[in-house]
Structure formats: C-alpha cells, structure tokens
Image (cartoon, rainbow, N blue to C red):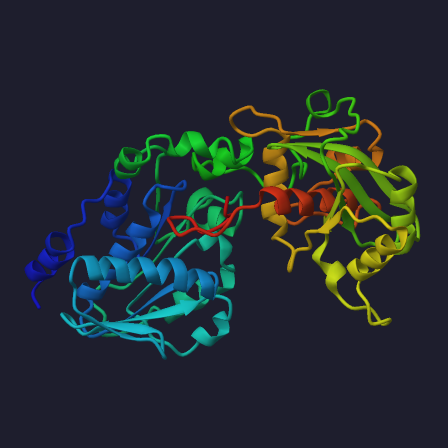
Length: 434
C-alpha cells in the first residue's frame, strides 16, 4: 500500500477534520509525544486517530492501545476506536476473546490492554503504542512500553499518550517541565473544540457549578497546579462557610459515620435542596458503635422529620461477632421504638480524590456558589478543614500527621457523595465522574 493511498484512507475516508491542537499533535515527528488538554478538548479522538494513522503506516505490524484500567479501556478507549472505524466504514475483525482488532486494509493488528498489570507487557515487540489518560497510569507501565517499541520491520515507530493535567506528577515532569530528548508535547487550549461548543454552548459554564475553583482550572482550563503542598480542603474559608445553624424541624437529620474506634466520629447534617448544613459532630474516644448511637439519641431524642443513616461502607463488614456496624445501629434504633429511620448505606466507598473534590465544590464551586455550611460547634471538623494536607509531593492525604484528623471530613465526604455523587457517563473524560 503506497503512501498516497495511506494518506487518503487516513484523512479523506475517515472524515477527520482535526482541531488546531489535534493537528499539531499529529504533526509531531518525535519518537514519543503527548497531548495534554482539558475535558472536551478532543483527546480521545486524537488518540484513536493517531492509532489508526500509525496502523496504516505500519501495515502488517503490531500496535497497542491502552488505558489505566480495564473498565476504562473497554468503555471509553476501545469504544471510541471502534466507533470511529464503524462510522468511517473501515473494515476490521474484532477478536473479543483475545481483545484485539485487525484492520483488513493493511492487516495491522491493534491490541487493547489495561495498564493495571504492566509486567505482562514484557516480551511484546511493538511498532507503536498509545495510552489514554496517562496521568492515571504508573510511570513503570510507560517505561515498559518504551522498551517494547522495537519492531525491526516497523516503518514509523512511535509511542504517544493523551491526558488531562493532574498536578506536577511524573507525566508533567517527563513531558512538560523537563522534557526528555525525543519527546514532544502539545498543550491544548480551553474552549478550542468548536464541535462541542456548537452542540453544548454552556458546556464549560455548567462545569463551574460542579467543580471547585482549583479543579475547574485543571479540568476545564488545562492548568497544571503544583501538588502535595496544599490543604486538602482548599475551598474552605471560615468567614464564608461557618455560621450559626439551628435544627430545621421539617427536614430529616442525616447522620453520617466514620467507623473508627478511637475516636468514633460522626456528623449530624441537614439538607435543603442543594444546600447542606452541618449541625453537630459526635466525637467519642475509644467508643463502640452502640455508644455512638446512645450519644446521638441523647442529643436528638426526637425529630419529627426522621433520621437518615449513611456513612463509611466499611460498616457493612462483618465483625468477629458475626454482625456489622450498620446491623448494630438498626438493632439499637429498633429497641428505642423510633420508626422514622431509613438507611442509605453504600456498597463501596467512592475514590478519595472524587469525594474530596465534591466536598470542595460544595464549599465553593467555580461559579462562586457556596452550598456547604458548618456550625461553629463542629470544632474537630473545622480543624480538619484547616489542617488536613496532602503528603509532600503526592496527591495522597497525610493521615499520619495527627491521629485525630481526617475522620470527620471523611464522614462528611461519604454523605456528600451519597447525596450528590454522579452517575457514570461516556465521553471524553471518564473520571472523576461529576
């Protein structure tokens, strides 16, 4: 297949009209290249189109398309590639059992692989590889693939990736800050995707209502923020989020627990529309779940609108007694004779980063809206907001600095996610799912 025909199939038949940043990415001639951009900037399209282009430039050879996890590989990356092939009527065979496709025009094979078990990539000789959402992939996986880019019959060897900024991580250091020789990177600009804005004109404006300021700058504007030196709850401001709060009799009490023995921690919250008010905190050193229930009833013996119980999913785990923490709570309240109690117990906890971002968005989102208020009675929760930080140089919360920290903010995060957490959607960005 000659180069002219390759070019026709690549651009004309597939009907791809790249955005300026996408075009610059495809033109990069470095051995390794990256596309960094905000949500909606066309990263998925750039990734898949580059994979197809390299498959045709390397007829009969092997390439690999990967993603951080298998669900993301199947639901986003692989789905996007097959959708493009189907729409362009490119003939291919899909071997589902071994998870690859063969493009019939050029007899090139494209493997689909998750980067979760990157050691399995050893022994594979590749003409090219491409990775989706690189910032959620271990650097070791990228290095394994670099070593596999060694097919002696390949005509155009290339390793490439797309991603949304995620702080000053290894991707930032390798591709942006101290760019390694042989690397090229395109930083896509926000609001460039005319196709998206034509279909959804208020796309970025709507994100302001779901993201806090910092996360909006990262996800919607493509900004790189230094990680590991900031407060976890950076959107909190005492003069904005702390106020006098009284119990509203017409709204149920939301009791959210973090099942920690020392101290046993929980919060009492009320919701009005999209607004949350943290009324009180219950912090008891070396306490049992039953003792936490006793203290809750002592403080709130009767509430006409009822109680909703939620919190840490680990409370579903059976203890040596054969019961769970939530079972204990149910039994306690059944003995009290209270009937207006419901349970909203999650099957699993959300990712820490996702619930933290949602709490920050409630403290103040990028549109300037404040929807989370805390009583000044909640001394320990306010200390969490003021003191909990990330471990230096990481995006991990430092839980070792003070044993009393993080428990109440964790309990709040479980509740906020339970009340306002999103549902999975398909698209250019698959997580965090707001």
